[in-house]
Image 1 (tube, rainbow, N blue to C red):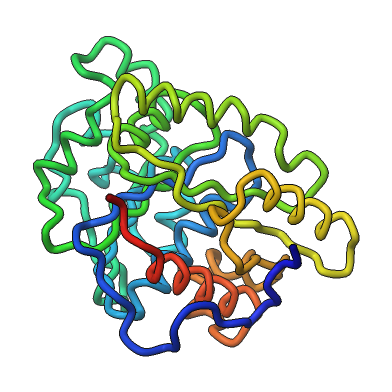
Image 2 (cartoon, helix red, strand yellow):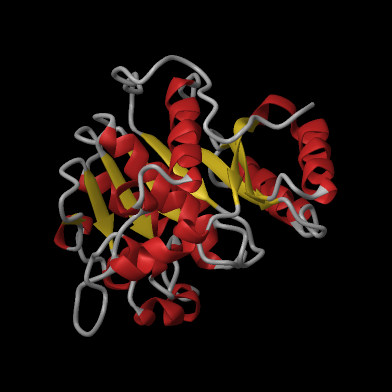
Amino acid sequence: MAATQIGETPGDGDGTWPRPSKCRVIAVANQKGGVGKTTTSVNIAAALSMHGQRVLVVDLDPQGNASTALATEHRGDVPDVYQVLVDDLPMGDIVKQVPDMPNLYCAPATIDLAGAEIELVSLVAREARLRRALGAYGVTDLDYIVIDCPPSLGLLTVNALVAADEVMIPIQCEYYALEGLGQLLRNVDLIKAHLNPTLMLSTIVLTMYDGRTRLASQVAEEVRAHFGDTVLKTVIPRSVRLSEAPSYGQSVMTYDPGSSGAMAYMDAAREIAHRATVA
């Protein structure tokens, strides 16, 4: 099956995107590094917010790259997700509105979060700390919560999967694309069986697509053969603008909305918004 070309518009036009019947909590996960998790989290969230959706990005990666891209302070003594998970700080005490994006909010991560994997081990209900925090925060005013996971299958990612309704997996269109994916899917099944029965793999996003190479097309075809309609029609191209935007504290949607990367993420977000909400 051929990949959708960049800029192709699946679904309906650019009118008001449908609001989900309840807040959709989406964990963006893949234990492989460098596959575009943070880029996907930030730009999908930004695109949704630009079409009237109210979106919270929860940065669960100790590197704090999502916080950087959303111009949310995450250095020094800034209250962050670490204190929510380990010290029971209310989520509302750390959530900040993203500058110049009235519908977009960020719960930042600082480097302190790197120690959370160890400190969570001894805590009661350690796998459900994030779910409890989001439940207490209240999600009735939100349409989407996008959780940017770290590149591991540790307790932070487990917390994201227990808190989420849906899993979104970015897969890069490169040689080792499917390597390690089986372990992630096994973890999703285990969490579904024991901790979160409503969890579902709802979306796979093909990233770093280079239409000039035969390999990228082969990988895209292989992923689509494995996962069918779970894979978005839109593919995300390799784009310098996607790499540049975070250094300016922006998503690519505001940094260069006419770029191939921005148009692709806008199309991908439109697909997600028009897909059936979780049961």
